[in-house]
Image 1: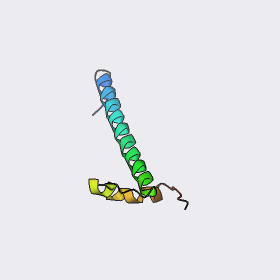
Image 2: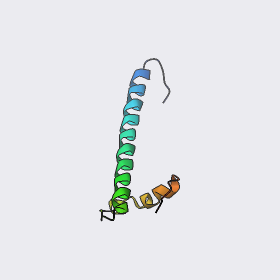
Image 3: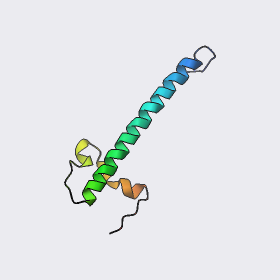
Image 4: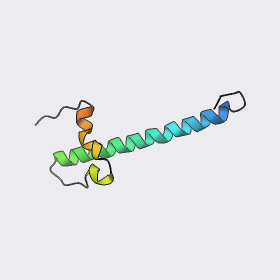
Length: 70
């Protein structure tokens, strides 16, 4: 779709809404994965991120360069 003077406000508003929703989803997913890692580190049993259909999340710390001590 070509951006013109007539449709620019609508396109930009839609794009901003999309980016807001995507940002919110990324924040929620990251917060949940962090919570799960903390709970696992404390020795507590969680539902497991893989149980919700995110099997790749088990490798999240490795892919993002996190270092574990202990």
